[in-house]
Length: 390
Image (cartoon, rainbow, N blue to C red; front, side, top):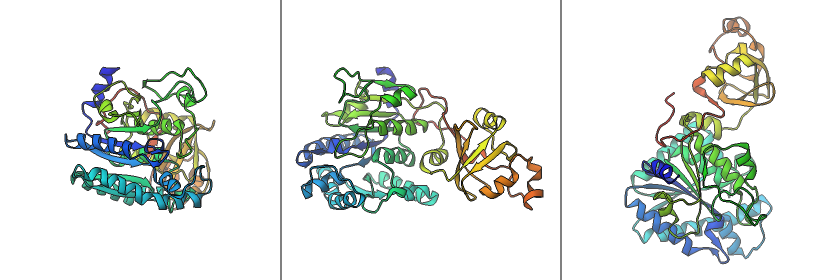
């Protein structure tokens, strides 16, 4: 397994480091020693030619400490207010720590609406690219002060998974307050076994991940495994590692057997298809027959009207819509060429009849294969830089 790690890491140069609240905070609020240790390591590797983006939790925890709150906040306004108090201090701590190495940091606060719009998605990517070219360390967090349920990422594990696509990372390191993924919940079982390598995220792997979160955190191990599933689908290796261990960045990048390594998929989604699959929220469903299912899943074909059985929900042209088998299994997600009303009118018909029914035929396909992300590609070890070429 050590050789497998080193093989993956040898080409890694652009790294996203997600740092959880459980790592950054202690009894006295932000743990300055931990932050300085991590910053020292990141600065050291930056000088060796590595590029880093940090997705950092800690704003809410910092605000809670500043206000003297001990228990987990329940309401959204309370969390938003705590984030407003804590975000400035969090950035100040990072800025001071990196300044010791004569390095500059930048702050990027996002909501999902910043990434679901394709143009804003690309603008974010371009901004990150310039910052990295300038040698600046981008520090990203959810814009908790304004986010509501409809535009929240859910937690920073999910945000990190999306950012890995945007920055085209070669590796995502998720630093947490555990050693990695265990075969059972270490808080409830006194004999848990660390899982050092995950080559495939099966149902069993997802089941062993606990959804329990720390009082200062948003997501538990389950959210980290879900993030791993998304990141590895883009061909990026993903490591869950103990963030409080001194020298952890060095240990990870030198290939030491620390934490849990999730291997990337061999068949990758392109950046655009990853955006469709994991960033956009489905606006409806199109149920398809067995022939369409085989064409899409096994042969990479587009969805034609003849394969549509029925629709669910109201969607417009260009909306993300799920392609679903009749047993309810989601097979793909794509951007539709026809709204729900027109799709219902032409379902089951040959392409040649579209104009006869609708009066025009702007497209042959309900969803073109270039705008469709198919679920569950084949998984195995892969070069973290290679991508599907469609």
